Amino acid sequence: MELSPEDRNTYAWQLDVPGFGEAGQAMLRASTALISRVGGLGGPLALSLAAAGVGRIILAHGGPLREDDLNRQILMSREFLGQSRAQCARQTLQRFNPRIEVEAVEENISESNVIDLVGRANIVFGCAPLFEERLLMNRECVKQGKPLIDAAMFSMVGQVTTVIPGETACLACLYPGQPPHWKRRFPVIGAVSALVANIGALEGIKLLANMPGTNVGKMLHIDATNMRTRPISIKRRAECAVCA
Amino acid sequence: MNTLQVHYSGQLALASSAAEETVDLAEGATVQEVVAQVAERHGDGFKKLIFQEDGHIERTLFIALDGEQVTDLTTPLTAHHRELMLMPPIAGG
Image (cartoon, rainbow over all chains, first blue to last red; front, side):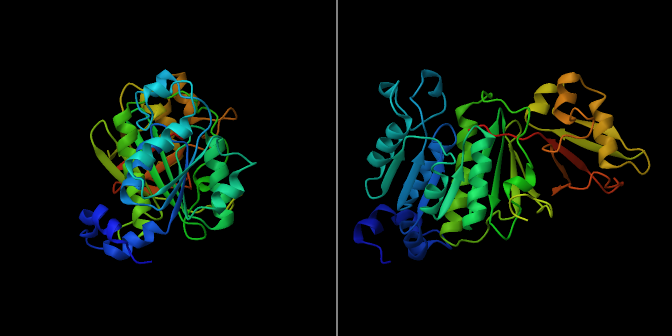
């Protein structure tokens, strides 16, 4: 796919990045990314994908915007309180980059929509606050052979894990079951979410644009208390119920 | 005596008094034994994140040793090892 003159103008500064160039931009343009939830993590992640020019972004997030979302959900705005988070995020992204397509799905990932939504994407980003959703997307990504970037945070730490079905460990290799002690409410400063989100976004951009230096086969642990990152090699489990 | 740095991530860091600490390594100690050893230093909230009700180490606790995921808890620790990370699952978004 050739870039249009408008695309060349919009993305001119990133076309100079070594290993990216027009070929990388064209690959982003032709790609569809599914993002599960567009809150503290998925919001800034979606914004960076939109800025980079990923051609189509599907945002799946149910429920209305609440006041206590606003410390971290940067795609939202106060006048949308009580209204659809997915629609608010879609409008923000579309205003920011009208050259891409943004689809709002006003429901969370579930058994009833996961096959269709994963099926329409080239890459999936897991940013949901519940393991049910993350593990469901992982299962479907493995089944459909779609790359999954799982980004997660808690308080001052974050993790970004890259799952390539058939090649790397999957999320169920790391968490063989529902973690019993995870709670829906977690401590969060928006800047930490955004930090982790942008590492996840960059990982996805690298994968889509076929750039070197991806984190495939690793979980990147980010400790914002001391700004230390640790890449951790992850292993497939021979007995994994999802990918073995 | 050899020592090992043990790092606690996420909920474990909140449940302990420090995000990391140094432990003395007994000769031939395994990952499982060191995890049990550090769990004894902390309160019930910490132990709850480490152990299942049957006393086994929680199967969703992610453990890494010097940048490698540990899947065999009987892995012996040696003087060459530097850092053990205990990471309860996180899904904050």
